Length: 379
Ligand code: EPS
Image 1 (spheres, protein in one colour):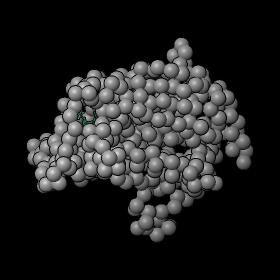
Image 2 (image 1 turned 180 degrees about the vertical axis):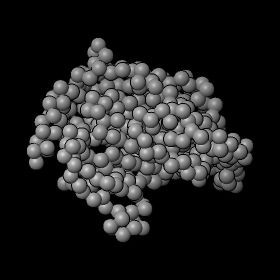
Image 3 (image 1 turned 90 degrees about the horizontal axis):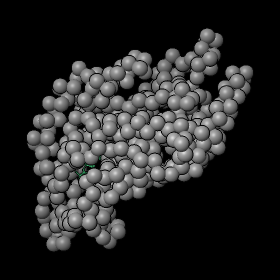
Image 4 (image 1 turned 180 degrees about the horizontal axis):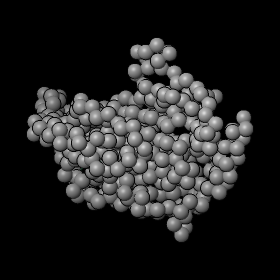
């Protein structure tokens, strides 16, 4: 099984991810991982911390001559803003952060909770996702994440080939697929920041080139939609997840939801195996399995809970009313969330891929994927 854990505090020495069950024989390009780390640090509306950090990955274990060994891979992103030992505790919990709940649960400090709850941890989730993306690329599976709504302003995705989507997304400071809307949204972020407030939004991830049959209908905890929802909901500040039509499917009759099935023999050599679907309302998943169509996942991110104009709170010592703490933060990290959600989706898809084709070696995975493709076409 492919899985990972992370470790590290926001202002501690370092952030780590250990990826277990990654197949042997894949040559890793660390520059590609660094490119995703850089993208996560960017996007309009980020705060002062990102001017301190220049995230770069170091591969500490599991690699020999830049190639995976099949043993656990440790990814490290060092914190430049390491100062944890010097930091004091806080007394006035921020509504929406883990401060109050964590201090009560662990019978401890707010600092001890916020340092781990912080979205700094997502740096190494992105590193793990970038590793997974390199495995997926070997199977012509490609992912993209972008912003589709920010502060209530919708920026619909564009129905253009993936290469054009990458170009549009990379031309946008918001990481949307419509850079012409950047000025309007940047203005909104600036005005919100001036008011001491923060903004949330919605991000979408598409995965193209998926074969049939990743995930399973057979057991609840192996259904790929369930796995994806868990991984995406576990990203800091995510409050909702949709697949395909999502909540909109509940508002329409079945005839306007389910994607008709057609057969187009000229498409038999594509991941659809010729089973064409004129619509993709299912978002690439039926009964917890990929159906040859692109996977489409959306996530709703709440606004950052650290407000420069703080909300009502209390002092945990005195229990008297006081404004919540303010520590340096971002006005908006929705663009970063598009990178993070893309990364965790990529990891879950890679996990489902090794569940189907094995995780001993890339060579064996390739052979099994080819055999399955042949058998599925003969079905
Ligand atoms: C965060 C608070 C801020 C953010 C941080 C998440 O950190 P700091 O207190 O150091 O300014 O910048 O996000 C990151 C450090 C990052 O790399 O994304 C929080 O409290 O969640």
